[in-house]
Length: 192
Ligand code: MN
Image (cartoon, rainbow, N blue to C red; front, side, top):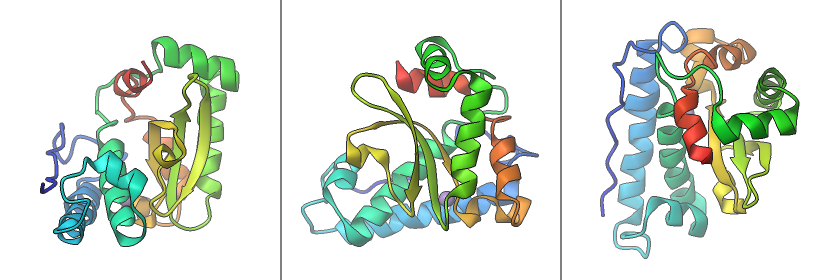
């Protein structure tokens, strides 16, 4: 099975000024496409050839893991944004965020801190365990919490390629601005 890159559900200029069309062109159009192309080449003729992407992530390592996880992580990242989505967490996710972190603002602050303090390249994740308990975790490089049995709910990309064209070295500012385009309708439905 060949993996294909899904079309983004918004136009290339829809997320500005938070994410510019140039960044989307490079980040989704080139970086993400390369992970998918590499993965397709690497799995050809292997036991992973007909496996679901999530299963490859949980069962592989090395180059195949890196490309599979990066392919999945970027789709998860880009598909949680919208220029006119729900502005606050809803339903069960809202209640659990308040219960766990004290308030939505406190949660956002902790999430931004985790992203700002991750050394090098990686991702900051909000995930849930089997009981619905929430965790903020830092993932190095291509890490994905599903390999530890957690269900991803929200992710911010803190690789430099995610923000350098628009924010240069100002990673904290990039993280803070991302809240303006997070569609909490999509993110809350991942927790249901
Ligand atoms: Mn990226």
